[in-house]
Length: 322
Image 1 (cartoon, rainbow, N blue to C red):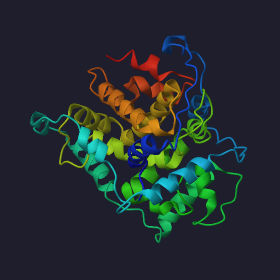
Image 2 (image 1 turned 60 degrees about the vertical axis):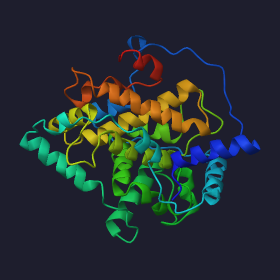
Image 3 (image 1 turned 135 degrees about the vertical axis):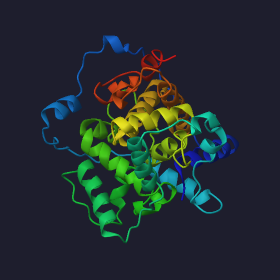
Image 4 (image 1 turned 90 degrees about the vertical axis):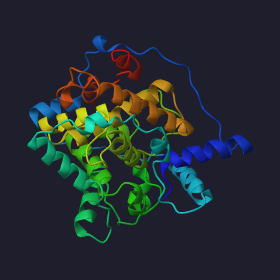
């Protein structure tokens, strides 16, 4: 499977030799600080009043050219397409064995184990439950558009690489679909804004939404050291504490990370080939926030407000975290 972050490394090397792509940069803008923002996102209204999702008026202004380009890169890759995470494995977290000895209470242990049990489950397109979850994601994204089949060119409108999205799950399994579905149901306005690339001075070459979501899931698993018996890094350990306060902490953190990545993308005026850099900076910001002493719940993260405020600058947010 062609994974987005691998594609960027390949394209960067390939493009420098043949001049295949051009970077599109636009004039930088000044963004307001967090304290100057008073605009309340519609998600806050949704969350407080528990109203139903507003219907989406879908237009076909998607990014088919980018997705075709991604498929072109896929075809140019050599070897199996199940590679993912080489970048994150190379950078890694700085681990410390002293954190392994830190005691977890029974509730933290139980919830951490349940989260770990979710990670190795593959997406199986033959399983009816998995098919229904994928259809539910489509309905959340495009409620007024009928899906013609589990294999359809329509899936490219959501940012999958090809007509069969099941092939894109090989790198991160079912949990990445669960993350996307949670995002669409819990913060529907934010989900749709990112899906439709609304707001900000967007790049000419945009990132494919769904494939980017899979990479964010994988990035969080690596960053939090969730494949270890117990996290061996401070952000991972502190996350388990947040998990003890809220069992949905991982899924909420995913939504925060997605919003943070998109905010950084806009602030950088980034283009397609810079996604890798944006994702790395997003990871660094999350690690810093998860290392703060005064973060006791997932809502205490400085970037949590991204889910409820629109047009918030990643740059202004990050200046508040040393």
